[in-house]
Image (cartoon, rainbow, N blue to C red; front, top):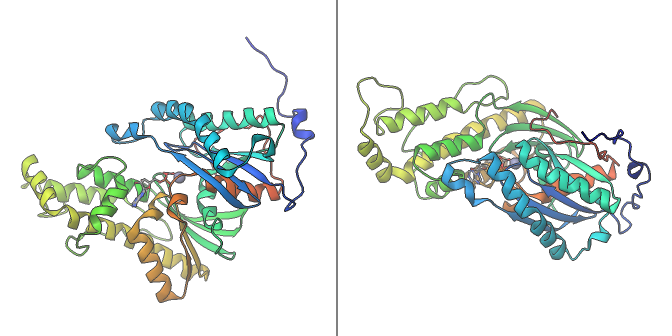
Length: 370
Ligand code: KG4
Ligand code: ZN
């Protein structure tokens, strides 16, 4: 058996040389590996110099992310991705001032790959380590562009695993004021797509088909959930019944169930309209809660973040609603919506300014409180 002395106070942590702020230092290498994207980014004084993302097509044929395959793909990708991020940024390892990584939440085997890589690098380079919360990073993706929101702002964070309204008072002070009680918005997209026979991840495909469809054609129910919380599981059930009945009804009917062939024909004939109608309902659920949150808090700086913020209909709806209600709206560029290390780097930059460094004994966790 191997035994170690307490590693939580390594001399490395005590003797760190933290470069002066804004003085040409503050070069951060960030790593993201929480799910099925291996990504690395270099940021200098809050400016992103590179954001390299390697996706994992292997999950497509399984209709969802397979955790062990994700971990293995991260193992394969991490060195070339980090190398490419450094090259693109024109930065050598010796010029890095801190190493950041996604600590939580995510798939534990996937997080471990990025965490151990970052810790090893921090130890070898004798540089500080910064542990980043993935959901806070999605929110702070809005601080990447030149046009940044003033604080406080509200952020609707919509991803494959989360749907939250976050009240952000400063880069390091955030509070979740509403969240889903069941499925996330991304899951609602992906599960609906699966029912339609579309491959994983279905969100972008629903978006694509919706562009050519009529969103008023089919009606799906809007759940009545109190407060600022969301629910998407009822929508999924109603889509299931709707397809089982080949569009005749979206409530369960004992007496009618279409054959597989009828169902397939119905989907083939109406795919664009079905996608547009589903997307429209998901967007109205999100925007209505955002309106409620803005009214209750009196905050008019409104951001969106997370993979689903790449959705063209949601982006449009946010801008239109903002114009009507006098909001300042902010939407990250596409590459900073889905999982990426640029958002980890910008979050790490603020933690760097706050000298919020992690100890080498830090471990990732699948779930994390804010
Ligand atoms: O933030 P993200 O990359 O990973 C998580 O942390 O979950 O979000 C992935 C989710 C998936 O559910 C995917 O289908 C959804 O974002 N997504 C979209 C679009 N692009 C990605 N959903 C709707 N429309 C899109 N264009
Ligand atoms: Zn994410």
